[in-house]
Length: 122
Image (cartoon, rainbow, N blue to C red):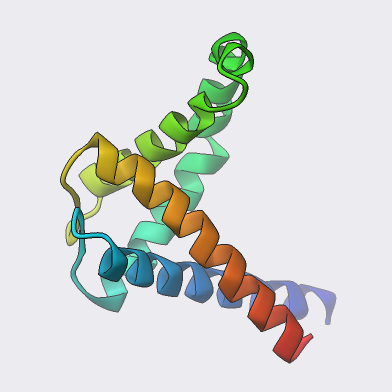
């Protein structure tokens, strides 16, 4: 029963992240997304990149992140979003500024969606 609950929560989180990515692409002109399927695949790839490559890059750039008072994490998040766009067909980011601003908008959008989901259904 616990595993089933965990899987359902994982799927809901995945769908909410895809919806947040779609909303982000609607808000920013520099991010293009071709449908919900591309959004699902993109959020899966982004999650995998954040779980692996991001953690290594975070550790390697920790001194620079401390020096910039954490602002370099915005660049790392933008880099993960840009790398996701390179790996997934149907997801395109025009430039670095769009990637960095997109990562900020995506984080805010995800936070809002998760907040309302938790308020309404948990």
